Image 1 (cartoon, helix red, strand yellow):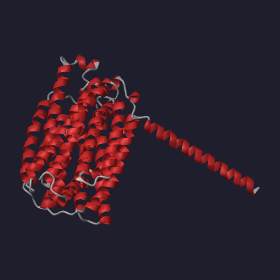
Image 2 (tube, one colour; image 1 turned 60 degrees about the horizontal axis):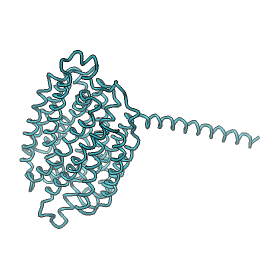
Image 3 (cartoon, helix red, strand yellow; image 1 turned 180 degrees about the horizontal axis):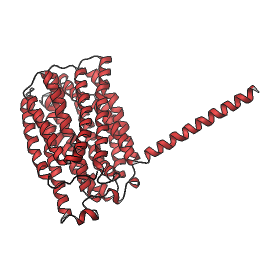
Image 4 (cartoon, helix red, strand yellow; image 1 turned 30 degrees about the vertical axis):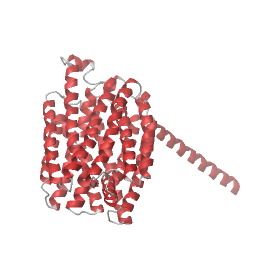
Length: 441
């Protein structure tokens, strides 16, 4: 009797385990069979990895490594940091336009698979990089990965989301990205607590290993996207659908104006941002003598607030309009940067810094949703290539200029020049106001 009861118990346990495994397989298949679900997972992994290693950790690692090494080409550490970004931008620019063209002409998923291998190689090399030269090569490959992947990824994601409903989805994926990136610095707080709250090579390299692993994992995930899972006419440009075309005398002309003005603004503002953003951790260390844990908390808080501000901006855009909200947040962020340029007390600086980053970046989901609602599906790869340039070539190349402007820690000049560029970049947004309609609500 005992053996029969035991057998029945084991039989039901095995049956229960099989049922759980079956449910898990179905749920996993449901996720991996949906490009939008995959996009959120990819964005989360990519954001977390970058949040750990790519921001302030990599910047300080390069600067301190340069300080402890023989002078390279007679350049200051800040100048070498700028050149590292420039190398990434060059690689991205070399591939981003061919990638966008091929993604439109052939397939998005093929470009993502090719990018996946290059991204994995970049991360593996960065893990073992012990010199500035090795970092240069790794960041060149990382730029190539971004140049190949971004146009195809953004296009396949846009093709999988219904037109007229994008800003909400884009706000959510932006929030996912920012929260994931925020978790990175907060994770770094624990790592610095364990390894020591000091800026030194050994500690920084150990933290980079941890973050690079997740970036490597995100690159591998690109293998799972499929063109066959995208939508049909449901995700087509709003200006090429029958109802919209009948209500617009020249829909193609208006679409081109919107795309050119929007991307033009992003190019200008991207150039300004690249001159400054890379150097904020150096600014905190050099001017305010902030320790690693303090910098991680500030960066993590900024990313969380950026994601929340993106959702709030999207909600306001439903009644006020997407372009109007974009203009408002960018102008407010510019005011914050003007004040930061005059080195206010730390108690004032920190909320201003969080507001500057949160406001400026909260416009990204709105900008992306307008562009994808406007551009026909057959051209999305190419337009995403142009859009990528705003934070690829211009963001990274302008970091070289920022490094030379700062020189021996002259941050004020760099911040003021950046704020002026932001104002110029806001002019095309003003011209967009009469061209962009509100979304379907």
